Each structure stands twice: as structure tokens, then as C-alpha cells.
Length: 480
Ligand code: ATP
Ligand code: MG
Ligand code: MG
Ligand code: MG
Image 1 (tube, rainbow, N blue to C red):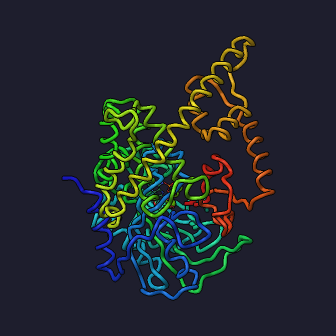
Image 2: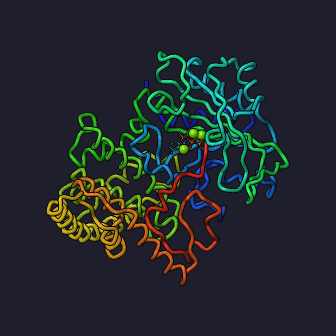
Image 3: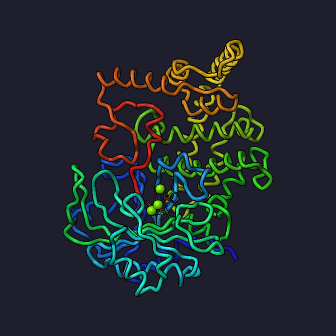
């Protein structure tokens, strides 16, 4: 029988509620913390408590937090486990319990409540955290071969460039135990990291130094979609009951079959399944498509869905009206699936559908103008390449023209060009971007939009300029 995503969420919260945790609602995707663009983890709403800036209301809490990680956008559909939107189930201690209870409860939840076989579980600890190693080995009984000591990148968690942080310990599930000993827990085809226990005891300062917090805290995150994928025994997170119904709706609109599709089409369907959840929840939490800050995140994701839908052959609303919009059809499905993620979503539905429709139709117009121009540019690039016997390439100036004048995302330009075997001079494109950046810097206060990079954001988001598509795919600063 299917262990539904909704039941996993409920069981997690009940497990910690019965161990003295107060169940609190998810915070908005738009954080109160002015230094972070979007909610990337469950701990964000508790940051002032961890830092000692606000008194705790309860000693420990548990939540199912909606999260957005734009740094994972390129992973969507490429790995089996990454989404832009996902839910993080968490248990938190505000100076109450620490390492020992956190580890023992996490193990009990995993092996007793969710009944994962202990011999399939591997754990990691921060390289010199002998205490955590000893709890896992001596008290829980995990054999030393399955406890890995790892470095800062994986096992020291920070919520941003500054802020509360600490060494962490993570639990991984092994899909292929018959392979025996392994040194590589990062192998996506064999292992999946699903639970991170952060021993939050420092505040990272601007200069990079670590200042001990007044109290020792616990901050954890368990990926709901990942646990669903393990318990539902499907090959990737997208095929769980949390996301697959959206893919089925897309199949219906595009007249394709996921089961029979090749990898390329499967990836397109996964991108749609992922991004649709992200855009619905972003708009639900009040983000409006625009060219700045969060508004650009949602605009970018919407554009990727529209473009991907077109690649799949969805025309108009996908139901016979070529002038119609198909995103509202998919959004309806997301909303139907989401009453336990966010009880307010039903009442917000009309606004969400309206916003999506307007943005889709606006983008389709741009896309059609841009596509015509791009087609001309590609044809002449191919022509001159065959005349000179050189590699067909689109100049950075042209890519920039498409971006700047037609609002045509450079990622889409790259995708279309690649499909035609034409490369893009990205160096030259970056130089054009840089020039524009310098010009606008004179007139505006400018921030980078590397979304998780807290210190690079000023307080004045509304006055800032969008600096280009690429800054959004900047590598994660979130580690571990
Ligand atoms: P990974 O190494 O797989 O990218 P992470 O180490 O970046 O994950 P954490 O910051 O430790 O993730 O977040 C805690 C938990 O949240 C993870 O163990 C995972 O279960 C879940 N999680 C993190 N990022 C994603 C994502 N992009 N999509 C789905 N679940 C995620
Ligand atoms: Mg990650
Ligand atoms: Mg992690
Ligand atoms: Mg990790």
C-alpha cells in the first residue's frame, strides 16, 4: 500500500509532537529576515531565536516548511533528488536538547516510525566531531564502516554567509546495498541524503570567524519528497504522489507518455512538475512576476515552464484554444494536491491562476518575436560557418540583443542554439552584461541576485536592478 506524502508529513510532526515539540505552521516563502531573498530551510523563521535576539516561546518545535532553492534549478530533472520547491520537515531545539537526543530520535523516526532497514542507512559526521561519531557507533550501533567523517562542504551547515551555523550529521539511504563498501555517499544512483541534523552552536561573523552562541541548539531538515521516494519505492522524487499527478496533467496537455518517453522528454516533464509547484507557492505567498528580486525568480521559473511546454508540443491552453494559457491548467492540479502543504492555498487560487495566465500570455508574445529573430541569427551563423569552414557560433552581441531588447533569457537562447548545433560566445555575452551592469550602477543601487547569498543583498531590494539571468544560477552558498 502507498505511503502517501501527506501521511509522511503528518507522522513526522506527530512523532516530534509526542516528544514535547510544539507543531508550528510553515513560514512564508518570503522571509521576514531581510538578508535572505527566499526561505531556503526550516530554520529561517527561528533565526532570531538561535541568535538570541528574540526570546524563545517554546523549548522545542517541529514544522513542515515550504522551501525554495534556486541554486538547485540546474539540478532539476538531472539528479533524482533536487527540486526548486520542496518541503523540509524539521525538529528544533532552542537551547533544550542537543546532539544525543537529536541523533537518537532521528534514528528512531527513521527505523521505527518509517521502518527503514538499519543496514541500509549510512551516516556522516563533521570530520572532528568525535562526540557525534561515538553516539552513532556506541549508542545507536551503526558500524564504523558506515559512518563517514566529512569536511566543511558537506558537514558544516551555514544558513548564509553569516548567521547561525554548526557541524552537522546526516543520514543517507542505500538503494544498492549489494554493492558493499563505498567511499562515495554523493553517488546519486546509489545513495540519497535525506536527513540533516545541525548542531547549531556558532554565529558566523562577517569576517568569517565563529562566535559561540549563548545556547546550543538543534536544527534539522528531512526532505519530504526524498522520504516519499524511498517509502514509495519509485526511482526518483518526481514519481512520488507529491509530484507525479502534475506530470500526468502535463502528459494529458502535451499528448505524451512519461512511461514511454525518452530521457529528454522525461526531463521536460520533471521540470514542469517541479517548477509548477514553485511558481504556485511563490505567487501564493505574494510574489508577483517582475524583473527584480523574488519577482524575477518567479518570472524565470514561469518562463521555463512555458518554454518547456512548447518543446513538448503544448499549444495554447493544450485543450484546443491556441490563444489560451496552459499554466492555469497545471496550477489547478498543484492546488488540488496542496491543501495540507498550505491550508490558505484554496482561497488564494483565483489570484494565482490569474497571475499565471497574464504572465504566460505576455511571455508567449515575447517568445514569438524573439524566436523569429533568433531563427534569422542562427541561419546566418550556420551559413557563414559553412562558408568559412568554421564552427557555427552566435556572437555575444547578438545573444545580448535578444536578452536586452526582446527580454529573451540567455538560457533559452543557449538551449535553442544547442539544438541547432550552434554555440554562443558566452565570454562576449558576459562582457556585454558587465558593461550594462556598470552603466546601471551609476544610476541605481545594485545588488547581486545570488539568491542564497545573504550578505550580497542590501535592504533596498525594490530599488535594485536585475543584473541578468546568470547571477541567478550562481552556485549554492548553502553547504552540506
Ligand atoms: P544535497 O546534498 O542533496 O544537495 P543538501 O545537503 O544541500 O542536499 P541540506 O541543506 O542539508 O541539503 O537540507 C536538508 C535536507 O533537505 C536534505 O537532506 C534533503 O532531504 C532536503 N533537500 C535539500 N535540498 C533539496 C532540494 N533541492 N530538493 C529536495 N530536497 C532537498
Ligand atoms: Mg544541496
Ligand atoms: Mg545536507
Ligand atoms: Mg548534502
